[in-house]
Structure formats: structure tokens, C-alpha cells
Image (cartoon, rainbow, N blue to C red; front, side, top):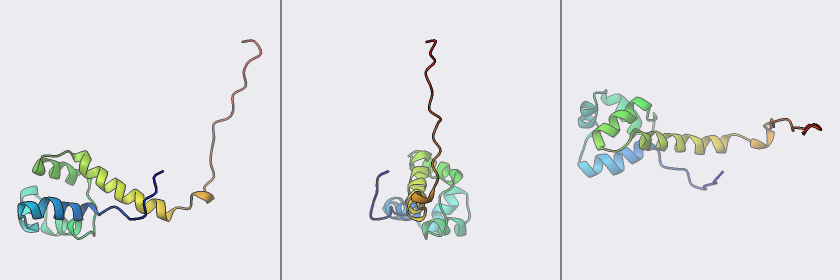
Length: 105
């Protein structure tokens, strides 16, 4: 697994900096355009909530990119923190049993 020292940006930060600012969109204007509450969009933009698959579909329709782009941002963000939190050394590994070749082959 690739180890990065710095965490990836929160998807809400990317939404705000690269999509909203470039288009001079306010949270109110974008939330209306997406058909969601201002409070829910504000939570994403201010890093208090993540991007759900439903929001990813809405954002992809609004900005002309893919829903996968948005879900990948969210997944990468969450995985980075999970990798920091979990101690892999204490996890038991389960391997497939070794196969014995038949003498009749």
C-alpha cells in the first residue's frame, strides 16, 4: 500500500476550491441547483460530512464529470485515515490451505 505523509484533501474542500469558487457559486445557489438543503451541502463543504453516492451523482450531473470521481475522492480520504488508525501488525492473517498434488496425476 502506498504510504503518503500528508492526508488527502477532504472532498468538500475540493468541491469548494475547484468547483464552487471557479464558478462563483455560493452554498445556497449550489444547494438549490442540486435539490438539497443548504445545511447538508454546508456540512460537506465545511468537512463535517462526506460525499454520499447520491450526492456524487448530483455533483457529476451538475459539473459534467463522473460520480466515480466524487466517490473516489471520498474513499481515498477515508482510507488514508483508516490506514493511520488500524494496526495491521495485530491483525491475524488467514491464508488458503496449501494444496497437495495427487500421486495419481
